[in-house]
Image 1 (cartoon, rainbow, N blue to C red):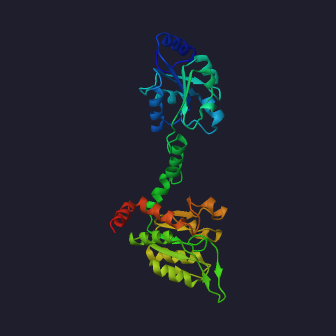
Image 2: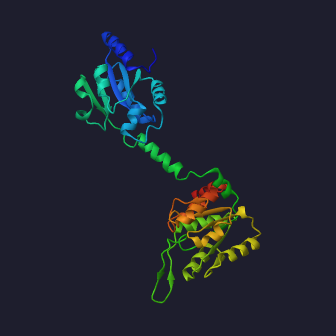
Image 3: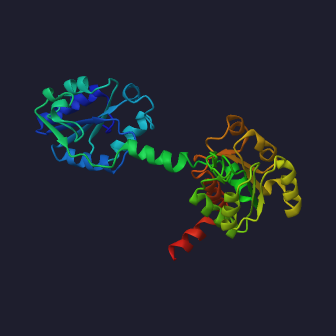
Length: 332
């Protein structure tokens, strides 16, 4: 008999094992993504008896209590569990709780994790012993899924975006709504003040050091922008212009650029004249909806809050330059 057994056959096997003096331990769960917390828990559960039986929530059962799960189908979850040395049998149940299964199999010991209080464990009144084993903080299937989503989904760049970023030699940026949040501060002397993001600036510095040329084009005029661009070493600064396409064409001619060598970031429809003509078009997460529909990539970060840095990092990583900067700063 294999380890994965239908409840009817398992009942007969348990009855025989009991007659031989074996103590039957039962636990249950979804065991969707097996992790070290599960392994340690099952090892401890096995120590409470001779035979460890796992009641595994079927796919139908999991969906009743966790609509977006399981990640892995029941047959695969069962196979992984059955490969563990401490596990003797695995059987399925379709209900939300294993109460009926526990009542049918009649194990001697019932075990759950420490996040369950003994008095709340389903089926506790049906067995001789009930144990709530210590819960391992910081280890859970949900936590693993969240880390995967954070590390891969939010940064899940398509091969197309990576390929486009690898070709970039020139980056063109709008200012308000890209390098800033879009807010405009005017003092009593008609000076226009702006708030820039330090990490955005550092990203631009790294691009510049890597030989990627930069330009900003904006319809407004601000001494604050002049100062900030001077600090960052960006010479191509065009202010007070509504004819962005004209400036764009001049830059293309001046630097002898091909479409695929240019990236641009804008946030409003006035920027579409440039965004539609570059190899990699990008907008911040809070850009106008019409722009978001048309660009190649929408950043996870908002304007003035890291959107430009996100693009800089993408370009550096695509070109294989990121590690060089990490190593450089590690040794400063």
